[in-house]
Length: 414
Image: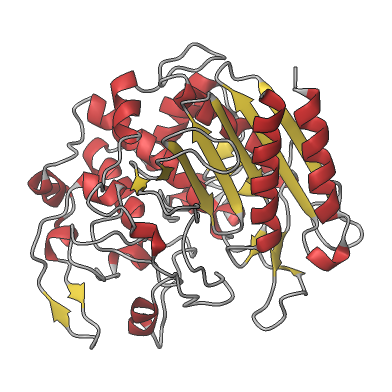
């Protein structure tokens, strides 16, 4: 049973944005759950696209969740660590599986290459300290890739395999293709494709049928449209071709075999199901609905441990819009009053101190480039997600609703 106060406040907030044509946000879905897996609020607002004949947004609408996939891929890797099939801190183990990582060099500012000074471990990949970047956040990497360019949303493993490092391993945090590499490590260690592992070891035990790197026919029928604000036209939004099309086009097993299963950005999901994965983390790795133990409590504790305590201001560096159609520039990630220390767990950012919305200490959160955001607060037993399909990343209207709806949930519970 939803909390009616939260439900009403969230609906009113979402509707204020989706009913206003000037926002360019046709529809939003927001779902929050408690530690018991029950919904606190579950809201859909607006339509699946800007074109007049698009159907309403519903709780069954399917979104490309982009980097929200990283949590799923990391949970898969940590399951393999529990089983002794992967090692978090053994670089030679990684190199045996992925000799490419042993040979990869570091791209310098002058476009020359340097040898790496430290070895790359799985922990570094999962904490974005291995040295890889993203071409849409890193102008140096973007320019190096041209005239051909890089496109990590192309569904082709070669895009990942040909990217150099942009930093020395272990020296700094930079968000990038690290967890794509973690997925490759898992596949090579186990002989199981990443999506198959996620389906068999996470989705099936949780009885979730609508989170998948290859959407089912039913999921494709519920797919939200992708939208774009073009650089220089901040008030204007329009429907665009989907950002991540290859898995949507693949019908046969033969076709699927040729598509890279991206641990960094490959999944599609219904938010109401994604939050059940978060509820499992709230519950120390055990599903409150099915009783399945997906991860051991000590594994979840490790994921929620700050991996980079020596970098307390890592997300206070400005993020450039290296590809302005894909991301807005941002002065920093998750600004907080008083600038408390920041943390990064295994695959997600952590707000070490309580947040303005009411979230507790050591809350995990992350996002997807098409403006989706989730949070998971183990201290207060609350998790949730807001989903849209709007480019570029860092949309003020969606982020404003994320904060407002999250605050409405905590306020109602208080």
